[in-house]
Amino acid sequence: MGAAKDSSAFTITLNGEPYRLDGEARLSALIAALKMRPTRIAVELNREVVPKADYDKTTLKTGDELEIINFVGGG
Image (cartoon, rainbow, N blue to C red; front, side):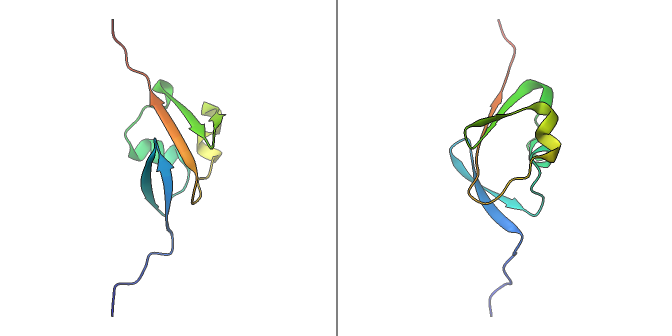
C-alpha cells in the first residue's frame, strides 16, 4: 500500500515554474512563506494585478498563474 494522498495539496504556476501548495491557499500566506515583504513586491494573478489590500482575501486555486516581482534597491 502506498502513502495516502494529501487531498488539500495543489499546484499553481509561480513565476513560470510549478509550485505546490499544501492547504493554505491565501495569497498573503504564500507571500509570508516565501519570506517576501508585501510592501516591496507587485503581484499579478492570472494576468491581473492584485492590489496589496487584497492579498489577504485572495484565495489561490489549482492552475492559477502567479507572478511576483520583488523590488530591490540599488544605485
